[in-house]
Image (cartoon, rainbow, N blue to C red):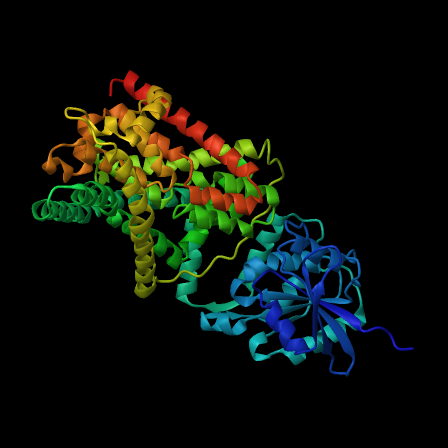
Amino acid sequence: MSRAPRTIALVGNPNAGKSALFNALTGARQKIANYPGVTVERKAGRMTFASGEPAELVDLPGSYSFEPSSPDEAVTRDVVMGRQEGQRRPDALIVVVDANNLEQHLVFAQEVIALGMPTVVALNMLDLAARDGLVLDPKALEESLGVPVIETVAVRRKGLTELTAEVAKVTEQGAHEPTLPTHVDMVERRVSARAMAKGAIISETKQRRLHRGLDKVLLNPWVGPVILFALLFIVFQAVFAWATPFADALEAVVGLVSDAVVANFPAGLLRDAVTEGLLAGVGSVVVFLPQIIILFFFILVMEATGYMARAAYLMDRLMAFVGLSGRSFIPLLSSFACAIPGIMATRSITDPKDRLTTILIAPLMTCSARLPVYAVIIAAFIPARSVGPGIGLQGLVLLALYVAGIVGAMLVAFVLRRSVTEGGVSGFIMELPRYQVPRVRDVAIGLWQRGYIFLRRAGTIIFSVTIILWLLLSFPQAEPGENQVDASIAGQLANGLAVVVEPIGFNRDMALSLIPAMAAREVAVSSLATTYAVASDDEDETAEALGPRLVADWTLPMALSFLAWFVFAPQCLSTIAVARRETNGWKWPIVMLTYLFVLAYIAAGATFWIATAAGL
């Protein structure tokens, strides 16, 4: 009576090359299905030992630990432990580790080996390690782990014969006493993994040593956050210091075009629509393109160098304090560009309560649409003076607004994770990319795309909303001696809203700007510019920059209150629609809108009252 084929399982971290090794060992002899009761994919295939004996090879989902934080990791644990329905416990395990990221992968490898099951380690992707100047000693690693270690390059089918022979050998030998201690925590395994990886290195290039040295500094729990904050400080100083000449030039161009239109077109609705609607409204937003480009230049460079992933690693401690994990950092980082891709990026978060919390706080990240609002108010009311060597007051205020949004998001997450989305903190492990010099072409393409998106919004959403607002401000026509805004439909609507926001320092024009800003944040700027253009009877004032008009009409406490409102102001309608889709209903988007309105009102009110009391 022939015995059933042996079962061999492939285990390892994500991105270790398991799938490539599985395909190389099984070829086309594969079956794909789902494990009973879960949606996790089950991949099994037939491999053959040198003796001709067949075996079933199972490719288990990538895992970082047997303490699962996702359905994939739970399946891997259950199969290895023999708890998975419809799946035999493996007769042997192949632990696949990435030679180029050895320290990280050895953490889980130790946990697997500690089970005492027949185990072979496949030291994979040695070709990539050699390409990067890293030479390893498999025998030294074998002595440290206490199990056979075989060199493999799965994509080139190197080492497969040696690997199958060693698997057949340990399978015949059967289970054994664990060669590694069983009762150790993750910290001890990580320390041990670092020592094993260091002991297995024969040689490495100066570049790899430099990269390791950089990580020791940049990922240091005390020094790393200081460096991150210093980089952010430089970014926001540059947004004002570098962009001012270009923004002034664009503003001058808009003024010249407006003057040309006034000089060459007869007075009437068409000319007013161009000067008061298109040029005063849309033009007031377009002039902030340089700030958008500079901000994204720094973000793209940090991503391209590999630093952004390290920033996520640093933020994991802060995330854990408020009840989230570093998994939430990337979606929240994406929300600095726009909350829509940020909310969609939460699909990578496996814990449903973590994901919901991240969706709810994503709007508090300062998206690029807020930057024109911040820039015009700061430029108008905050003096462009230095408060230290290379430190501008305007850049400090901009940084403070971004930090206020982040702190607000963390506080909201802290409250949510201890109330409506209560749950445990999930673990967070991520692969850190190599450091590299950014490619000029890639950065240039990224800046082109960001600039195009900004201008496309200016030419579509902002243009459409601004023209509609201009029509509402222009009709019905005012009687002689009457202010046009007072007589208009928009003015009447704003008068009703102004009663609500007057206690927090908003006048009618500020109240009016909040309504179209629900379509897109930056429309608040074009709304103010259009309102003041329509209210002016002087053609020269129509072409005047927005900043001086605000200074003439607002006080500093009013301006600070307006900034505070937009730190917490509810997102645009598109973001709300995406939140509804991602949460499968209106319940959570309504919760999001409600708490954002309340926070914005309280923050704006507190800012106005404190600034007024201080005599600003």
